[in-house]
Image (cartoon, rainbow, N blue to C red; front, side):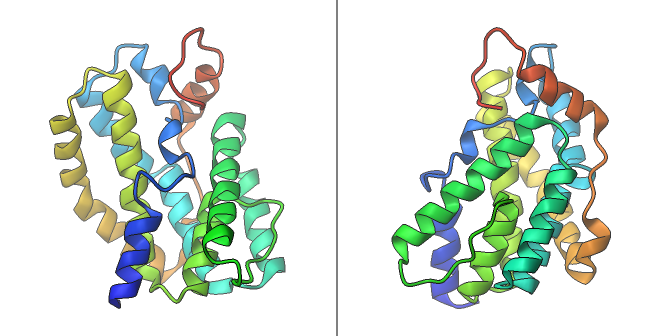
Length: 217
């Protein structure tokens, strides 16, 4: 990975990159209102990585990296990701972040030819842009996964009795798990394009019905 690649990743996945990644909790707020704390958060974060939306997004990001800039294949991948997200909140947040990412990258690099996608999920857009900029696939997946975990844990510090120090300990403990998963996804991305977290889905649906909310979804 070149210094340019590293700098791109640092910019793209910084909390100040205006795509709204830190405005969503994916159902974590509903868990918080049921009394979840540090122990529950650790299990939830691990499930999110191993069985949930993050695993699926890593696979989608890898597949997008490999087929970009083919608009037909990218659109097909995006449509499949839409089908895998039956709950409106997480689905719309993924699409919104993808659209914001596209607008930002086009503003920063107006000469770059990025396909227009109807199903512009965040993971698909990131994978496409990473390929167009020549960022290595593994580095892109690690940065994407680490950013998603960080956003989840940061959300927990805002709605749960979880300190920033406790969140960082959980992040540290999951870094090896993330690295191993990225290696697995890289070997066969289609095999990992799935999600099986029914409890997360129920809480994500419930979150939209809460009377008091901190997050968009």
